[in-house]
Amino acid sequence: MTYEELGIFGRLRKLSKCGPVSMFEALLRRWPESSPSQVAEKVKRFFRFYAINRHKMTTITPSCHAEDYSPDDNRYDLRQILYRVSWDWQFTKIDQRADQ
Image 1 (cartoon, rainbow, N blue to C red):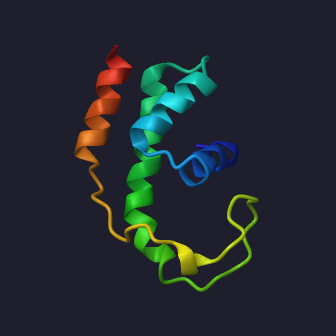
Image 2 (cartoon, rainbow, N blue to C red):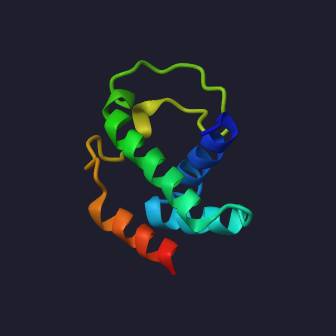
């Protein structure tokens, strides 16, 4: 996964408020040259590592961010801290839609 792709994932997650399934659908439209299984694999990988590392974002001190979509620190972040790493329901839906 490239830094450019990570930037796209970050903007979709933060600005567009996309979860795994809606991000998969948005990326299918955005990347028509990629197969649905490739897009599904990248989305599942991103959210798996996002869930693994989410708790770290609540303990770090505010810092300068290089992306334009996150100018504030973590004070107003009301998302949950711990996520289930397997994302069972969401990843099953992604697999079903990738197989269609």
